[in-house]
Length: 316
Image 1 (cartoon, helix red, strand yellow):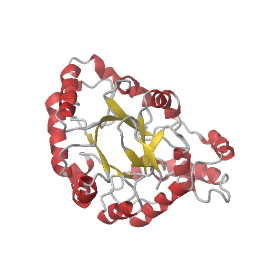
Image 2 (cartoon, rainbow, N blue to C red):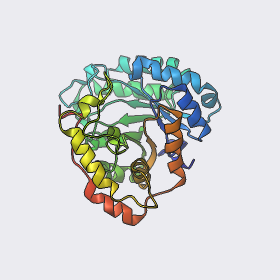
Image 3 (spheres, rainbow, N blue to C red):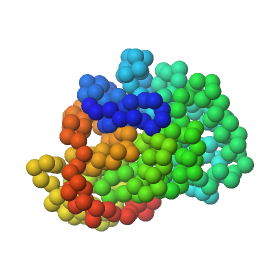
């Protein structure tokens, strides 16, 4: 498994990481495959994901063989972070401290490697609550409870966090980046090169649309939130675009999941990519991509016309 620098944090992390895996077997397989970066959040299962990671990876964490990043959910439980929200309803100082303490307990850690604000909007800088919240963030780092701070950026909107990420205190940015969504390539990647900033890429498969597994007749299990994400004619659109994308595959890149991951890793600004991996087989398949390297320049050129400006999280 190849390693990359996570911005200025000093960590070297596997370029393939794990995003919110609740399966202990998947976590153990990830360790076997050389994966060293694990992303979770206090909001995932109301702390369940953190507890599973803390229990399953306790030896790796204590032995400094794993880097764990978690997140403070917005207190109002609203994603994304809208400019109209009051910061006191999202990240008041005492809530930031209490959430951090709970994550430390769940993960069985004395210090969080990376603590992220689970949403952000630069409009909150003008909120009078921000000064107290910022002091709390600084205090938690000075006390050694948080080693590094980061931002999990609003869906498809890296422009909403550029100002806060210019602050040296914030060293990582988690962002959606994939073949369809190229928005981070603009100002965010430029900032990453300048700082440098650790870029953690989520949703590399566009919730499955970039795997080729979403068909017009796909039926999701009861309670699966993807039924809403792919509502209406979106499944048919995803299938059509997936078939068009499959036309670029050749003997160098054989599957759409491989294409999707290697596209992300072709950007030097990216530190790690965190596809969802709930089964050991998924872990092995995704980890294998790390051995194959960046996509050829010719194939990257073929992918440019496939950029797709959409936001199905918000278009309900």
